[in-house]
Length: 437
Image 1: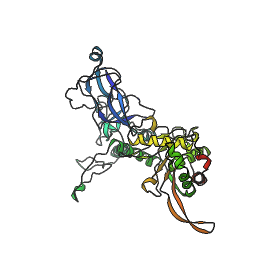
Image 2 (image 1 turned 60 degrees about the vertical axis):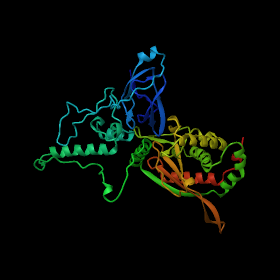
Image 3 (image 1 turned 120 degrees about the vertical axis):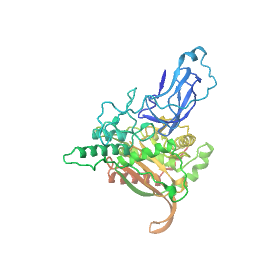
């Protein structure tokens, strides 16, 4: 039987093979992990659906695979007769390319001098070519068949540059077919590449390092956000002097309960209340229907700096939890994230995000929105600064804030009012909200 990549979670269409845990000729048990896959910044194992002997490994480490693509083949008969015992693996053969997503030239395609229509992505399982949702939307808006676009990323994944190159080739053909169009004798028009590889070693020693699957995921999602969302940044400062005094006063009691108070936990409490007051900042835009989707829940993502890159786990129902609960959950989910033990489900469903660089000394910065959310709060490090208080100069701890928002959903006035309420919540945090219950 062929074991295909299942639908792991809603909206997850592909992943990158991190490691292959079996070899051809090896017996596996039912539910035994045979592969580790990185999907949307989470690493998880794929279990064998039945016991048997691995007869073929169709993928290799570092390859991007799509839902429905064959990963391995299993002969179920031998394992059934031996009770599913695992035998020592035989020498592994080089992994073959995926059998279900091999690009093949179409026999019915018309060959052109620009080569725009002589390519056809074909899949025996009928799986569409791998591409992010933003690329699929652009292609749909332009009436482009993505099976005609050759993807340049791992596994044939299509990026914005691939789509742009295809459109340029179509334009070349249109120009060639236009009346009076001429080409230099013996020469076909060449389309420039979307990006040029530079030989930096001409100027000095260099070394190269492959981008990790996580870094590629971060890179792809940031490009999608930057190119598809009209983003505006609203800056502000909050005086957190009183808040820090409350934290210092109550921290020992929390520590006795095994709870560590952090500024991010205070922010979660304040944002839970502010997002209920400003539901549009907690919404998403459905571009297919041009409807704003208001969510009756508040799940906030917290950007976590890991050795492999930035990962954003989600804390659920923030508006329904107190400071102690949020502090405990924040610590637990942050540790799991840094150890890469976070599940795919814990990375999905966020309605808003905090990116706090204060622990490493950051000041004002402009964060990138995590689509399909419409806003993200960037938080820098609180610094003592001289400020005017009742006509006198005093030193207060000032926290730099930046709200990045989707201008299709939120206007400038919405952003200002939202930030004013966040600042008010931080500057007037009630000591009653710190009581351990």
